[in-house]
Image (cartoon, rainbow, N blue to C red; front, side, top):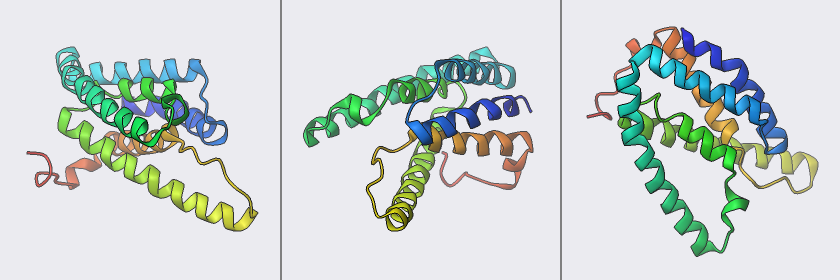
Length: 167
């Protein structure tokens, strides 16, 4: 139930990121603190620290792969991903086990790409002009996290079995 506290702050970040590709530092900081609080309250400090111990190296490995991709394409890192995106992703690390984290990041990234592609397609057709091509990562992750926190608070996960994915 505590997870619902984060949703208003996530909403502010989602709107700001979608409109301007920036988020206010105070909303990011408050959201990160709430996520840490949720992790400790619901799982305990030992589980939250263990999750971070596994998820942060996964973030570093994924980040290095993304950096390699950007270098190969000749794209500057700061043009592709912002520091707010990195801090937000790192803030998610105590919330999920490694399997849940990788599943959440994969699903929410695919959702973000699909939603952004649909938005670009519709927006370009309607406005007949170019749209900012940068993907609002915090917006996509924030929407997915809001859905996850709501489903968790309403205990909807008891109806879903992910045994075929999480071993």
